[in-house]
Length: 562
Image (tube, rainbow, N blue to C red; front, side, top):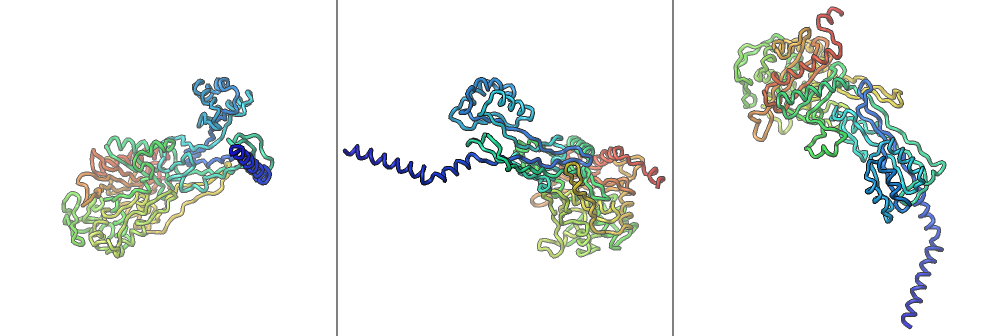
C-alpha cells in the first residue's frame, strides 16, 4: 500500500512539472531556445597598418582561422581525418581520435590556420557534406620586420590588448570596429543560415605613416648592435632626429625584442618599455651645452670670455673638481667645452644663480615631457630651488649633468634647439593618417618657443665645432660637425659606482645647416668608460652613412650653391 501510494505521488509530481514547463512556461522556453539558436556572429575588423615614411609596412593585421569540430555530427571520422590531416599537417590517427569524441560538443583541431589552408578545409567540408566541421576567423597582428623598431612600435596581444609605443598611443585611430551578422545555429555555434537584414559591416582602423625611415632605422640598429659588441656595453640607445622639425628618423634601443613573440619575451625583466622616452639617466657632460647656452643668452659671458680655472670649486659646501683633477688657469668658454671642465660649468651656474639657471633649464623642456606621440614618456627628475629636497650644491652639480635625470628624447630635443637657431622643436613620429590610400590627416612640425636667441645659437654652434675639431675619431672630410661628448657616473646607494659609466655623444651635421642630430648613449661599456672613445665613433659611422643615404653635399659645395 505504501509503495503504491509513493508511486502515485511521484507520477503526479512529474506530471505537474511537465505541465508547468510545457504549458505555463512554454513561451519562455521557446524564447530561450530561439536565443540559443539565433546568434550574432562577429566579423572581425582589421587594425590599421603602421608604415614608415615611404610606405614600408612595419605592423599589419592578417586574417587567420581556427578549425574545430562537433564530433556528434560527424559520421565518418576516419574518412574526414584522412582528408584533413595533410591540410592541417596533423597525424591522421590522432586527428581521427579527436573527431571520434562523440560526447564532446566542441573540439578544437587547429589554430592560426592560413587563408589558403582554410579554403581547402572549407572545400573538404562542402565536398563531404560534413555538418560537424567549422571554421572561425580572427585577426592577428604581425610585425614583418621582426625586431626592427620594436620599442617604437609596441605590440598587440592575441587578445587585442595594446602595449607601448605607437600601438598604444594611437590605439583609438588604429583600432577598427568589428561587424556582425545574425545567424542561426546549434549551441556549439555552427552556422546554419544568415538572418536577412542583420548584417553590420566591420570598420577597419586607420593606417598611419610615420616620420621614421626604415633604412635609417635599420642602419642605426645595425650600428648600435656593433657598438654593444665592440665596446662590450650592457645597454644602449640611439636617436636620430631632424632638428629643424623634430621629426624622428630613427629610434633604437638595445636589448630589443620581437613583438611577434611578445609572450616568450615577457620572461625578461622590463623588456618592452622604450628606454628612449621612458628611462632616465644622469647625462653628464653633454649637459654643459645647456649650461653654456644659458650663460651666453643671459649675457653673463660672451663667446671669448675667460675664467680662472683652479681645478676645484665649492658650491653649497660641496666640492666639485674637474674630471682629471687638473687646474687649467685662464680658460675660454670654448676651452671649457673642449676640455669638458666641471669647475667651469659650476662657475657659470652659480654666477647665473638658481632662479635664472633653472628658468633656462625649464625653457629647454627639462623636468617635463616633450609631448612626443609615444606612450609612457617620463618627465625626468629635476629639483629646483624651493623644492624640499633641493640643496645648494645641486646648483653646481646640475650644471654638468649630475644630480639631474633626463630621458634620451629630452636631451636630444634640448640640444636640437641650439641646432635649430634657438627654437625648441617638438619631437614627433606620426606623419599622416590614411584610409584606403586617401589622406585623412597630415601632421606638421609644431615648434615650441624660442629658448635662446638665434645669434647665441649660432655662436654656440661654432664653439661646439671647435670643441670637437681635434677629435680624430670624429673626422669626416668635407663636413663640419658640432657636438659634445659626455661620460656620466652611475648613481648607486650611497654615491656613484666607482667604475661603471654611461658614455654619450650628441652632435649634428652639417653644423651650419643641420640635416640631422644624433644622440648616442651606451651603458656600462667595458672597453673604455669615455664617451669620446666609444660613443663618438658610433656617431661618426652613422653620420657617414646618413650623408650618403640622404645625398648631403660637402660643406664647400653646399656653401657655393647658396
